[in-house]
Length: 326
Image 1 (cartoon, rainbow, N blue to C red):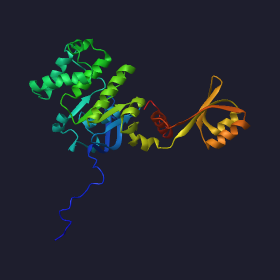
Image 2: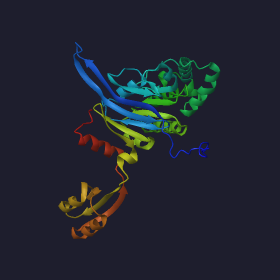
Image 3: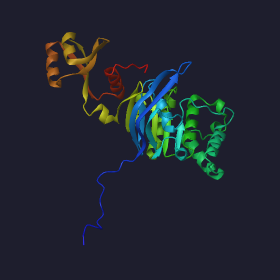
Image 4: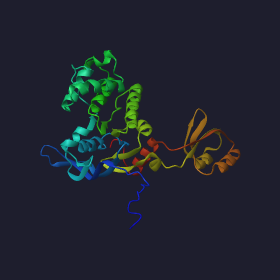
């Protein structure tokens, strides 16, 4: 008898379960009076988003981010290619019960209160009234609208930040497995952005899978496990911040005086401000420090840093000859 037949097997790595998958997804729109002009909004996009991830889709305006999101949600159909959401083909009606969605420019019924609006959303998902009475207060607490003055106020009296937060609450009314957010921080002031960011982080702590579009790179850098960059309908790259930015660090230097022509050999992106020069060190730090005396320059500060997501984003666009206009 084989002694290993009943021996338990140990998993050496955690299985990563994709909840969003696309393969060569493409969308072409027809325009013009005779519909004889074609605009390719999305070009052969293949990506995967895994269970429990917070995934950020980045790109300038007009890059195709919203088009991809609408394809994933089944709002529009692809011209070619395939995709799956929670293991089902895109557009599967049963899957819609398990997802939440906050559009970029959502329309809310102006004369409903925050509480009434969530009741309406709950009714669309056929959530019993007894369950709604338990869920709605928790959601209002999560998004910071639990005060009676906020939950009983008509939506036409809400600020932009409050509308975004009540929109977030309706996206969670059905306790979805995947939450899609289209530019959730667009048009918000710093306080509003902070509040939405904190809500996303709380969802992340609950193990929700979050897929959101954004062009606010500083917020994405603080929130996301992985990101993808889309420009002119083309998926440029995908990965974690460590994979994209690398683990290599550079020195940022600041000083005064010296021969600028010699400094340019050592310092990239050299700039001058208030009699000081700034930039990124290229070359060995020890050799640079030794050369300062020869060029009669004084070092004020040297800081070890990693490239930001914004710097990486701009470099990727520039390398491909792309512009922010998409």
